[in-house]
Length: 252
Length: 280
Image 1 (spheres, helix red, strand yellow):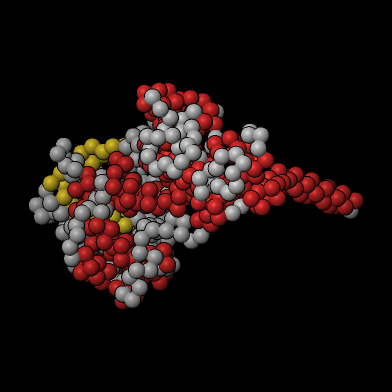
Image 2 (tube, one colour):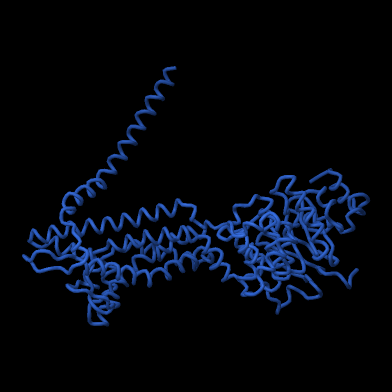
């Protein structure tokens, strides 16, 4: 599994001003697979996700050590530019955060436009919206404000916006936690579709969700990776006692 | 039961006192409007807006050049002051959490407390003395100095209201920090900033002291920024201290024009602050 991993972390540790949040994480994610990251609150799962596209270091005083290899290139290498890393590694956040001053269309192409890409934007916009399963709902009002959409639609718009810059990897930080069950089901369905083209890492506090959408599951506890294994194994026959206690609801 | 009655009585009394305070606060405003309308309205005429001032005793004439001058001065002041003020605000909001930000914030606070006549003296020393003449640009520098601190703080407040989730969304798309600040953060705060600009403009338009020895005055039409320039406020001042009844009339009318201009600015900013355009 080592050679063809799309993402692999080597002794990845993350720190905040107040101390260590992530301890020596070694983990691999295969191309076109979904990795779910689970664990109790404060266990470092969001920090782990934010280390993968160098968003972690935006918090004043925060830094990371170790390596994160994406396609064998270390995103923490000295010559690596965080801006370029973030174009290859898209991110979707917990709460839908479309740009409120922009229309639906402008939101989708914002990553292209603000990075100076001028051509074929509208084709790209349609493609991204189709991939995010939003095209049919918005094709007649592309120039309406993004804030006129419902929460679930806004989240799919954010996914389309992230896809428009053609990343290889998509990071999702509890993408459905602010949504109702129906909107959540749509996002999960979407994740299963996107898996055909992208490598996805999804943080979730919902174990059923992890079981539904992921191929692999990583269980984090107190900043450490306890276990990373095929999802079925984690939920039926984990190797670690702590994992079993967590997935069976003994704590967390 | 009696305590309930007592509480209601107290409530009524306090509400009455608050209402009284509101009325008291409105008295000066209403009386200013009343006085200016009563004294100035009769002297309002088309020629007030279009003609040059006439010598004493000569009928007609107006303050057209002063209105133009005020617009010129305020426009130039905006040209100088808006980029600096808004840029400072952006810095304070986005990078202002360290000692550098605290220093800048302290300086803007001190600057906003400096009396406007002192700002006028500074502009006199900075611009009038080296140029050897009074000029529109000197007046504009003085007005810009007055605008910058209030504008910077207001812009900072507005930019801080932009949720950090939007910054993150933009950065996560691989948009560089500087573009994120300008195209996303500043753009989102624009509605509030426009309000702050209009308030700063209306304040600058009403300044007299710093213009007395910077832009001075001018009896003729002037559009050159290196020449002395008339302004409504200085014109009002000159007319008001003159001994001629005719000029007093014009001072009242000009004051009314200025008041209406400033009120319009304030109302517009109110409207913008309330409309759905805010942040859109």
